[in-house]
Length: 299
Image: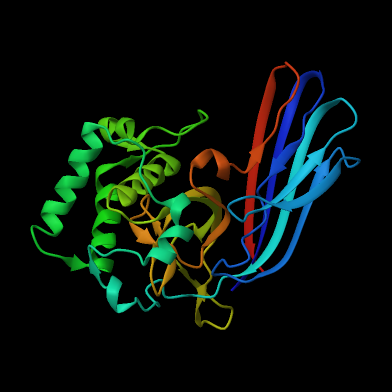
């Protein structure tokens, strides 16, 4: 199903400001599940110079440099994607990785080094991981995919979803103590849990496109019942990817408790959330108002 997405982010300042360089990670990854058929990125003021580069984690970044003071800064993304239904379980693990725990081959572990090694674990996180180990494994091993499904399901069940307008990401300890967090908080918790288990994991930011409501039935003029396509909604979203030998990077969405599928359009992947932020930049001292709009429709 082809869809068209429009995304606008606008900063309105209370005075004329001098802008520093702005880095935008708003270009879909070259290997997301849904083919990207068309893409444009526009900025106002239009005379800004743009330089594209690939950052250390491999994300496409547009760096905008502004020559004149501004009262307003606006970014517009428009893309067309083909959301073909995909099976998120359509992968084949290496035999050595089918049961957990397993060890990455040494040459693979070297490549995965940035995604390995959890931050120093606090007591609450360590207890949560040990409870997961005990309940799922005891003293034996467990099917690797089954472990990931259970980990994802538990975070979804134990952490209530909340919308947080504040910048930054909660620590895993905060998220567990509050039993609540945004999608980026739950995802950062999942990253740390996976790394505590010795698995390579990274934080992902992107677009999530999903039905607004269930498919509805409509009556045609000829009296026949027709199925109407559901309305769609799009959001900026965060999830996590874990590396499994033979399968590659597999997306887990702890906010929904599901695996990432065709509606997850990745924009940036990084070891930590700050490096996957959609927009990073600076402005001279001022008060700013942020407006944000996302629209999506079937084409």
